[in-house]
Length: 218
Ligand code: ADP
Ligand code: NI
View 1 (tube, rainbow, N blue to C red):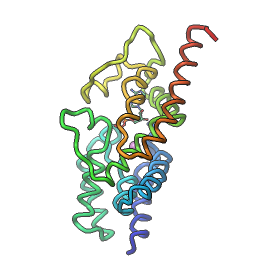
View 2 (cartoon, rainbow, N blue to C red):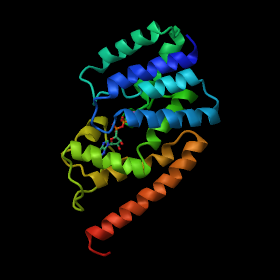
View 3 (tube, helix red, strand yellow):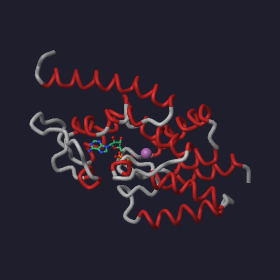
């Protein structure tokens, strides 16, 4: 099998796993992340099979989406071996998908990623900001019955992973301050940073408009 054929097999595997998701992690998110990962991979000269493979698989075993992530991870491993990836390719893809999430980066010792991993992480983070990021946050908030906005609830400064997942006192607007506006400063690669700055500007405009309307100022 050529690398292109292996990537196509991974795409189909990911599609079958993600097609039912309705939390904003659905397959169109995956396709955007893959497209961006391909673009950043061209800039950073990372291995295409590792980069695009990890991009396709990065949310398949997400602990928000499946009851037993470990079981899914072993299923993914088996699948990758069945399409003839070697041991080190399987390990690198698994390491990236296991360690790239924002919630992992909240831990005391955030995992260190290879350049291919950094490219996939940047691509996932870019999809959380800008116009699409705004839409996804609202969609996620709706699915989880989050309050839209409450000026009396202040954004949380430091959060553990458990606190991040606890939505009792969460608002959609606070999610921007707790996560989305921090992502630009966390980008790994220069191209991602440049794209992020543009998207961040748009989020600030959105928040300004939102708050003015809330106060009936415009
Ligand atoms: P990761 O998979 O990198 O840990 P998340 O699961 O935190 O990322 O986020 C997935 C998507 O859902 C992102 O677009 C994110 O901004 C959005 N999201 C996560 N938590 C919230 C929240 N409390 N309110 C609104 N949107 C959220
Ligand atoms: Ni993702």
